[in-house]
Image 1 (cartoon, rainbow, N blue to C red):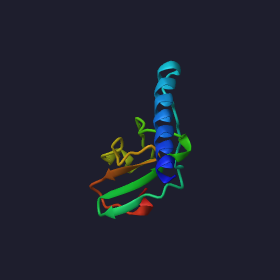
Image 2: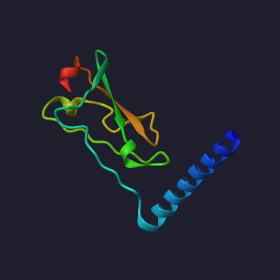
Image 3: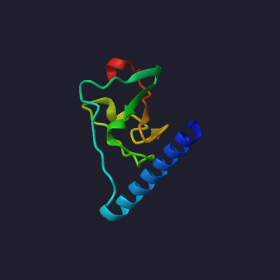
Image 4: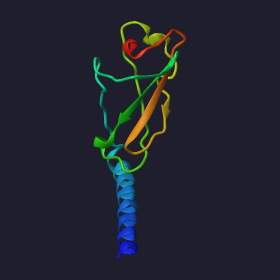
Length: 110
């Protein structure tokens, strides 16, 4: 029973991937957009010059890893940041973005 359940789950996932690819070809690419919020983004400092953010995209419903495009908005120091379009550890449900700034950073700076 367990083997049958695993095979059924694998077949369902393969079918979903195929359908997503076929729908993208027929209707154009699937697009999902969102924002972490201007005043509520919980950047995590991981050393004196770097912060990172885990972004949950589960709600988008992707079956495979999508092409991810990021942007950073700000009012002062964001122009000094490096890595604003660099995506790390992308999956169908999440990705990480890391920023580097040669100034001293803390969670309150972002």
